[in-house]
Figure 1 (cartoon, rainbow, N blue to C red):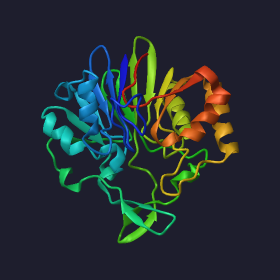
Figure 2: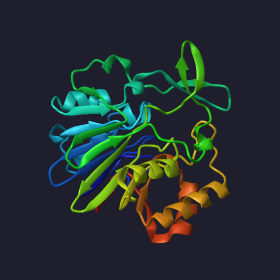
Figure 3: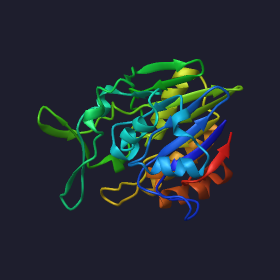
Figure 4: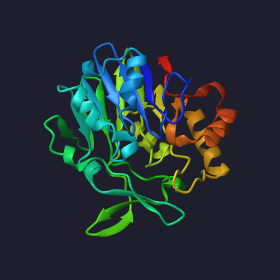
Length: 274
């Protein structure tokens, strides 16, 4: 299985553009999968540099309804007229970020795309095909990241804290190995892994994605105790982790210092084989 990072907050070199967003290309023995499309058309530019033809993608998964994961959707649909796009219906609700200076920024997906013929809305446990499934509706055993603070949604004309029912994770099984892909883990990476274990009766061999230990709105990070608890939990799972995007550089450094080779960072332009 090959994973190429098409968009991320950082890049491996000046050859690749970067932005606040995430897009991953995953190629299995049978499928060419895109997971998220970043904040813009940048994923398409970097795809060309990485030898990825977006028109060949079999299906796209949008992890949740924030622009930094689905902002490139219109560009994708212009480039690929056959791939099904899987996302939660709630992803098209109105989402906002409340900044510490009082500024309110809309961070929703383009609602005009909601009725597009390639869009398919998923359920709590959704099978795309053999060996590829999506799950959501995470049980909250642990508190969600405090860095979710300031992320709200509009309900009946009122701003309420986001419940993140629009977030989903991707599971790929191939050659006896299981990969779990998260977008931002707004529901908490520990909660997501616990939910996965309830579904599969085991932990995944690999986890790729953001862990949301950093808040762009406030500029703050999760406290050290929380990060250390997460690193201890991840080490006990024996899962090899590749993180990025909303994990944040400083939280990643702390995770890395505790986890060593059990965790690595993915920047735009990177390519790994698992």
